Length: 471
Image 1 (cartoon, rainbow, N blue to C red):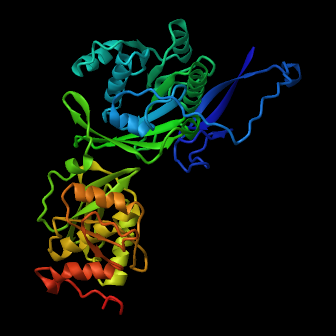
Image 2 (cartoon, rainbow, N blue to C red; image 1 turned 180 degrees about the vertical axis):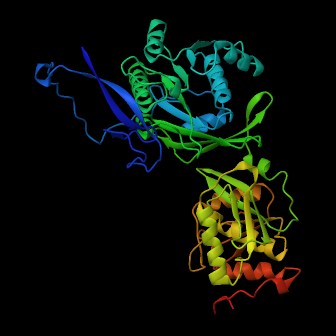
Image 3 (cartoon, rainbow, N blue to C red; image 1 turned 120 degrees about the vertical axis):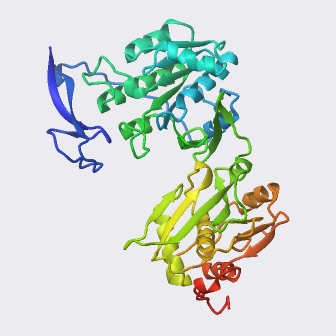
């Protein structure tokens, strides 16, 4: 006989409570604790079979480390994020907003691996087999030897894998739809997601198949379900983008077999997702070079340099509290740059609405964008357009000083390749400028003074406070 036991589990973090409560003490989420039924064996612990275990062989740190073999899909942007291809026996969690293109990307990857001679199984828990076939036909991939199944029971899925020939690549779309007979909970609950993921992880390690799990996301963009699943898998990929924009960014948040800061850039077309080998040129193809409030930022995403346009709009506000709207950048970082402009440079923006946007649907987080953001803000405030052939990068400290950033040589090389002639940056350490004219700035006040000097209405711009060295 089995004893039915009730527990209350947070659907966000997996914390377990003896009774229901409105707020989870572990993650702070409200109304996330739900009732779940557990099955616990009533056999006393003294009567359970005990195993003494066996000793395992211990190894030393020194020795020859063999590189992990890779399954190359042929989709260069996907292989780049995966670290050069998928590792046999690894398990990857892929998250993204609904309709962003996760299933499209995985159908293309499955077809590419199947055409390369690997046995691929695509299991859909949300769509029927005919729906997956229609997508593959629309993408021109109907002839690929990909085995399809529409199943949500984890034990049935694992039995299917074991019945045929060895499987090299598996897609589970999605992990929130699976359920296991070993636990009594609804599909999508923390217990079912954790149990199903654990069974699939065990299968991947024992069989050597690469398993891709599709995960739902919450309203704030985080992968839904317990965070323990992210610790169980070998890699966590995030598929980002705006539904109104054709660009898609595949970003690695965790990767045990490769770098965690690489990105892959795709473009959504009528024939599916196409690779973007030179994203910098694509992101800058439609920019208005002569408009005030735009600056080109030379950023880094992993080992790939990217040039992107920072757009700013500063307008007088009629509200008691001016608006601060940010798309693609950290709002706290914008607040810091505005405070430094006010306190160190005399640029008063307390009575203005500020809108900031990273063109192309990109999201950047590195502090090297501080200089580009500040230049775009001052340019919009004064009406002075920035040089169309200049790029900006540098970190701003709270003292108003401009600090150096890493990988400056790669940023300069990318700017020179795309035809830019000038760079505004902190002092160049290695002395290699790749033929660009370097405008060195040591403080934010000096940059503001240079932009204000070109303003058509200088009266609207207060004179920045400069140090004795800059004066």
